[in-house]
Image (cartoon, rainbow, N blue to C red):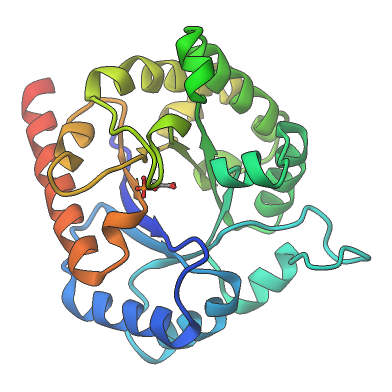
Length: 267
Ligand code: PEP
């Protein structure tokens, strides 16, 4: 069984609609995507229509993602966006549980479980972010933390037909992401990625083995390949380094080189 290789970026609260559409167009005109690889970009909500328009007039080569969603399909939820609204725009993927949303907007695992079910029921892909804080790491509960996050957020998913083929996990240690983050070493990531793989098997059964696990946190062209060489890592979820087309391409290229290296090592 070969899992697909995924690579993408989350723009966070950056880029206007025209900037995001220009990024999409330039990237799709430049990038060469190998057969078993999927690329994605996750612009802010206000850019989604401009980017899906660009995908209609130009090459429809990337998955386009949203940074969050509400679990209800409609209702009195001022400031929120629903799954049917994203589906109507032609969105492919929804990021759920990013560390900034957990930290700043009190996103809980139980609410993430409702969101996961809402997204999967509509047949859209989920990119579920998990990861331990610096404090949890210091107390040596990184593996327990990600297992707990996965067990709650993915509770009940195994019962939904086709659902596991729509799930991907982003492992993002909170201590390694963003401008104040400490870049991780592959040896930090490997045991937690193994724990994620074991938990996916426990929660989703055999199909859990097909769920891609991406690594994210202070990735750039200099270290991308060291993470993708790990046997449980199936791609990268990149912030700052991929916010220019040149940076996206350079980091993607380095990630593919590491992946090929990892394939040689593991035979
Ligand atoms: C992130 O915040 O999800 C992230 C991966 O950011 P960066 O690559 O900038 O550390």
